[in-house]
Image 1 (cartoon, rainbow, N blue to C red):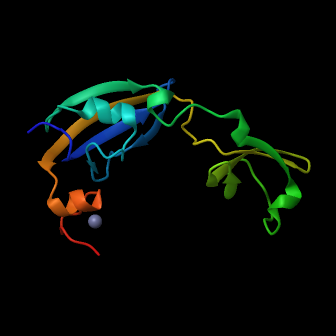
Image 2: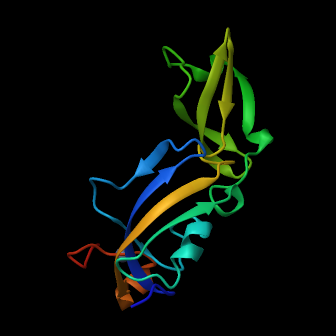
Length: 160
Ligand code: ZN
């Protein structure tokens, strides 16, 4: 059976950056399971999963436009350290909830200079080309319940 709209597909993946550094991998974990055609994985990868079968292995590069998007300069801001009341020690890499143009966003502290904090509301993988190595481990048709919910149910098949 091939992956098509409304398939439930499972796959192992290793995601690397342009330098070949591993950003994320399912190695040592359960394969990732998703409902094909529902936008649960990045669009570029979803497109290339189409028509694959269990056992297929392939590598694919996904541009930022088809991945986590391009970086937006307006999501990078400088805020006074006083905006972080109650936080003892602001360090690069710390994440906070912030208010963005479209509501709540996660922001990451990119650097601290004196009493200025530079924050970045872009997705950490925005602007990056994603290099995926994929192994498809299973394909099945989604159940009616899964289609109604728009997501995959676990081995138990039911949840509330
Ligand atoms: Zn459900």
